[in-house]
Amino acid sequence: MNDQMQPADDGTEHGHGELGDAEFAEFLEMAAEEGFDQEEVEGALGEAGHGPLPVLAVVGRPNVGKSTLVNRIIGRREAVVEDRPGVTRDRVTYEAEWAGRRFKVVDTGGWEQDVLGIDASVAAQAEFAVEAADAVVFVVDATVGATDTDEAVVKLLRRAGKPVVLCANKVDGPSGEADATYLWALGLGEPHPVSALHGRGTGDMLDEVLKALPEAPRETFGGVALGGPRRIALIGRPNVGKSSLLNKVAGEERVVVDELAGTTRDPVDELIELGGKTWKLVDTAGIRRRVHLTEGADYYASLRTAAALEKAEVAVVLIDVSESISVQDLRIITMAVESGRAVVLAYNKWDTLDEERRFYLEREIERDLVQVRWAPRVNVSARTGRHVEKLVPAIETALAGWETRVPTGKLNAFLGEIVASHPHPVRGGKQPRILFGTQAGTKPPRFVLFASGFLEAGYRRFVERRLREEFGFEGTPLQISVRVREKRGRKK
Image: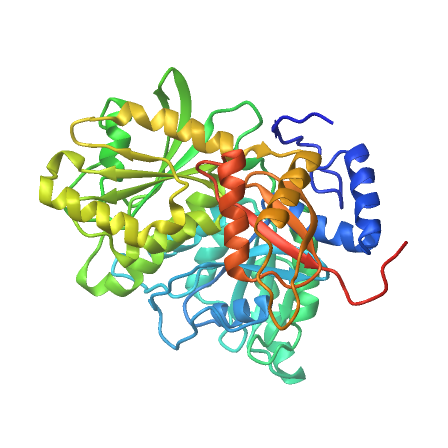
């Protein structure tokens, strides 16, 4: 077996992760010796070895029950539910599973109808969410019927050309099904009567969702065909300099820059020549803030960041070093890491720092960003162009780590050394042990460890740290799942 780290083979076999047939057969033999059967192994590799999940956007006007439906789909109460639009939320994307298939759900609820009118409001809300989705659930309140706002959403959905499942919500019994039939008039096909609150009809609707969703996302990572420009999302809280940085690397004024935070309304995709290569950048600056829109603004900024990450391969997170690292900065970094994209941290406005601020900034980084020490760091000035050229090597390093795969033989030799030199602490008279493992996928690297017992979070972090020390993985999150051997007799 080749003992060098390799880029992933795109031809992922179902149940094999990214293991080739010969490597998978060898791995099955190893698993059988430790008491794991083929079904367990394929299940573990299938869960960890998937690439990007298909994306379902849940759209509709305010107060039709979108967040209630999202909670029903994901099987837990996570999306905030409140009887008024514009509720700020930390998260907008969730993982869900139905009938053995996994997918992402984007909750697009909670906007205010702003003073620009129905058409502009709907466009700002629905278009952006739908753009990154593979399919859409359009939620309509069956007790109210189709409104002008609903009609506006229908027009946008037709233009987008994505598969749509029409959900007639708030149908709590047979008498309400007559109300749902009136929604045939929207021209989106059969309305599926549902009570998101009570769960009635949601199973049948989810069966239709699975028909509409592709087995895998419609595009490769980066939203472009293999060999096209690598795709970078510029993300960060409003007014950290995303648009200024895009203009600087583009060498021209392509995006409006204003001292008012959040003057960029729409994402701007730009082909940029940088470091002798062509890159595709998505500028995701926050929306225009007004006093009466402050509640919805943060939520909308989160939505557009999440949508940009869905289309990106690497996230360049801009942090304004002239201010203390904020909760919002940390939240955006967490979004990038949880999305599984490669990550580069760009500390902007570096030219404004004096010695005292630089000292305190380093302390803040040590304290607040310890979980992303692996992310390449570049100190830049979007205004002057200082060190902007250093972004390219940092991005390339992050992408290389993101695509790296360690062969199974090399990984297990490494795991054997870990178990011998740093065994898991004894808990309750037992000492769980890593038996063997494999890397099931890349983009980001995903590992499955098979163990004799539960591995504590601290030990998992130790294993991740040692993986990074041994194999690099700079600039990429690592996903590590553990499959524990069931209590039964060892198979000989």
